Amino acid sequence: MAEGGHAGRCLCGAVTYALAAEPLGARMCWCRDCQYIASGSATVNVLFPEAAFRCAGDIGTLRMTADSGNTVERGFCRQCGSQIYSRTTEPAGTQPIRIRAGTLDNPGLRAPDAYIWTDSAPAWAPFDPALPRYRRGPGSARKE
Image (cartoon, rainbow, N blue to C red; front, top):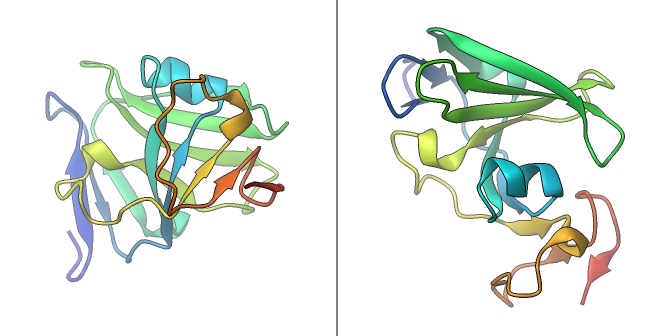
């Protein structure tokens, strides 16, 4: 790991990664894809510059069209299935890489700054009233 950086791994340890940068932010995402990934909850994602991410191990990827219309790649461990990251591939270079907070060696590195895709959240979803909520992606209209 680079000095001043961060590291993480999957559940079984077959995939490890290093991040040679500080987080740019963090969000909880309630889009339907994230609810499937997180088995009914939101995903908690810490944002980093994509160029700062280095991964080692047998990582699988899945590309899909997200609710935003962007093509998103999700990286996961082929051994244990842990979700490691998601990144927007089309349009390229438009967003930071989103690292699943629970895979960081320090999962408390950065608390979420906002909730996104809240229109997709179930009625029982817990929201901290101190954090902004966005109906769709991060640039969409806020829910008050």
